Length: 479
Image 1 (spheres, one colour):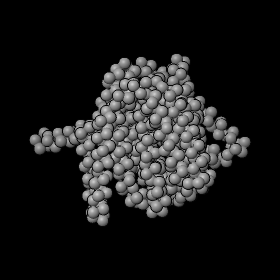
Image 2: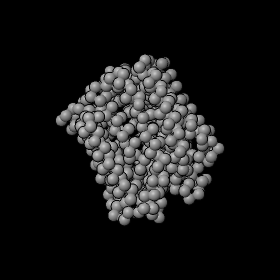
Image 3: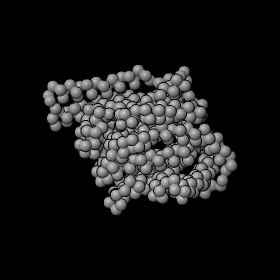
Image 4: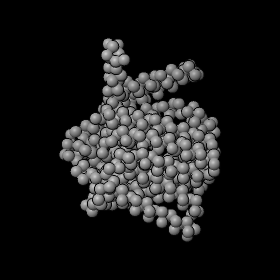
């Protein structure tokens, strides 16, 4: 089952990531640094609004879901979500009417929040019910629509808010595709018990997400306030690019392993859950280590190709900070925060998110006025690090911390070794296209061998499938 889940999740996420990266590159080039910086600020406000209003529902559903009352929980969840979206619409309209925001900004925030809420709801329903194929379809459709709608918005209007609205609309399209898998369950009657379970699981999450949203977006808002959209554009574009590289693997790992680990944990199969969590941890270590190695070696060339030489040069001094910040974020958000829903710990999330927000906020206010984007990158990295250390200390001694540290160290050393080898070859030869190709081949082979050795993302199962296929071809049993 894990191999099947990994195949669907990783394949769809990888394809979607390629589309998302293409979208990002096109948007930056079509919009320019100022317009794209304005889009990042609009999305930051939308993210804060979403985190303060509706984001908790998807995680509360995941934590409270039980197979024996599936239909009632899903239909009740969707009814509550619809009421929440309507309330957000009223609040956005009121804010615009009172003059606290422009009508265009209020509309953009509402469309993004509603789109994210609908997409996340149906994505979580399908993921929790282990419908990997449905999730894969929704993920791909959403990414296609982000690209299409975004290009149309920039060509037709060329404004930051039009691009944000297109992003929200694309999520509605993805939600419709995902919703087909739960169409037969949405007509189930309202269940007060399901509503109470959702509220009990979600109530501690509301302040946790509200606090965390400021920690995640504060650096961008303060940077925009102090330096303007032109500085936010390069910093936000590169940060989002690296985050997207890591998220594609992180979501595949989370979708494949965490739902299965939770199913074992809630049925008191702790040892089985621990083994699955251990494999997820190995996968996260490999993802972050090899991604960091790749970006630090090939980053300047890739960023120049993606966004142009100007942006690549602007972020070069802070590239390591951005990479480290996002690597820490992976473990914080995709391992430890996911464990919370395996072994209930909503209060712990609130404390960790509060520490993240406080550290990021204080450092942003202190450093950004003097150091600009470098201060923003360092502030966010330290916020993630403090929250991660809080999780590690709180979970010490429990089964979820009995992880394959020795294997993980070897995986990290493999990534460091191939990085050192590539730098050495470049220093000896002086570089060039041929040397880059050799280095890329060495990097790929090292990653494949490491993944095969530690069964990362079921690559060994995929390899056996391919070898068996060609063996059958040679035997003549396949056309």
